[in-house]
Image (cartoon, each protein chain N blue to C red):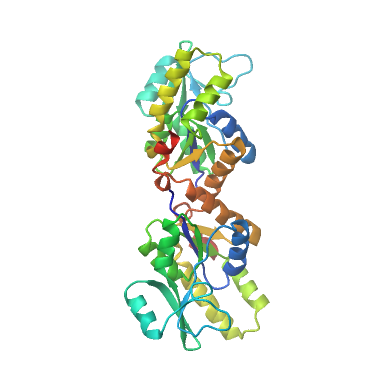
Length: 199
Length: 199
């Protein structure tokens, strides 16, 4: 059986990753999600392995040290991370997984899973990125300038990715990512049993 | 400027390459064609560099020996070949080119143009290939068996191609090839100037 694809999308702040990924998920309803591992307490009906994997801080840091967490963030004193073992299990079971990762997260994904596919989403230009940041935000001039400087630096990471997709329109960018998913499934290297399957 | 993609499709006899390629060309009206070089005389209004490049047998063989012809066939005593120099020129000018090549032709294309993309089109199964050959042909049992034996051998070449596409339906196979074209244009390696273009 063909392994499931692990596909990640990253991009500089303001590239529009969230909106584009939502559209790609709509186009690929069978693609799985990564469930995060967190140190915060379950709330209400939240179930282990459905909304999150719940772990203590000690367990979480042990997982991280053992390479079982791709990347993590801290939010209000709690950790949230992307666990590697479920990715491996889904891929082995033939399940494609679409991941929304930071740039560092995508690079770690590729290190852990050689056959993962990493996509870098870019704004059409720095000028357009500035327009978008100014258009949507109530941030100070200083904050906007800081974001632009960060984005400018982040863009130099494009060369570490398999693909670059320019987010000129959400529709067009989502179509390109969808094409990448379809194409990658046809790579010979993912279909080495095809000759046997002919018979 | 991004170079044009050189994309070839090959497949065993009976895979349905002609029909699928016609559909892909419909979907990519801007993709260029390779113009063959031939030793036969121009007929009627045929113009050098439009229908064919016309060459003497001596010139043709000299081109072949100098690696300027990817592959060639003989038909009624005349040679027909795929010239490499126009491919290089079209690619440099940013023109994508969709090529209908024999298996050997695709392998030569990849040798000559490292960044070329080769696609191997497969029938859904040997049983289905047999059905198709029997359905369409008035060939003898012996001829059909010979074709199947050839196809079976040709299928073992799939591993030399970048992509494998199963021709279950023309629509589906053409969509997959179209996705491969779209995806390949997004590969970072074909967009190494993207960071500069941002500014």
